[in-house]
Amino acid sequence: MDEYPLSEKQIESYQHDGYIQLHDVLTAEELRRIRAAVDEVTEANIQRRQAEAGGLRDYDRVFLQMVNLWRVHDTIREYVFSPKLAGIARRLARTPRVRLWHDHALVKLPGDSKPSPWHQDLPYWPMNESGSLSCWMALDDVSVQNGCMQFIPGSHLWGSLPPINLSNPQDIFQYVPDKEKVEPKVMAMSAGSCTFHNGLTFHYASSNQTDRPRRAMITIYMPEGITYREQRHIVTDGLGLKPGELIARDLFPVLSEG
Image: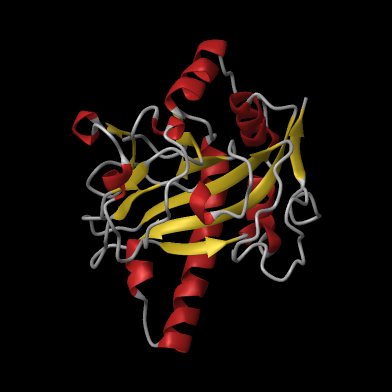
């Protein structure tokens, strides 16, 4: 994959706002391959959850989430290890290298769909430092009707706030001064385009009101020097990480340096 053109003005915009939208990042063939892979693992996961639990949970109606697919699917591994995407993350974060935190596919199913409430990501991650960032790749054309991303510019500067329950959410804006001045920016975009956002940036996605799934592939990158904060998380549970230890084992490979 060729390097994606990224200007200094765009990097400054990301640093200022805490997010950026980038158009036509994937080629038609790259998009076709990752769509097919996500469809494959989605169908397998729906069947498994129906067999194990008799149906989907309330959380699944916010979004169907599948984590660290790079470890079980070759096409998704190729996508997650993309130097084009990791290079964007490294340049946006202004860091000499980025590591993988984890990937996850997020699918908003049609029908009984719920919004993804306003939240930050970092409070859910066992990290002492801020600066990690997510690439949210649209695998379908996205709009308010099917659950595109929305951001609050500059909210990454408000600090880390308490995490909220995503399936039974509280109002995160109760922690925000001058919340009447908050104006969300809606990120409608075509498939193969994406956003990158800081782990502290407030974001939201509406429910899927269409008759088709809304598919997205998320890759989360850690800048150089992120250390472990003792906290339960599906990715680090059982690894035996010590508080303050650099998150740098084989599960968190370097994806770009320069």
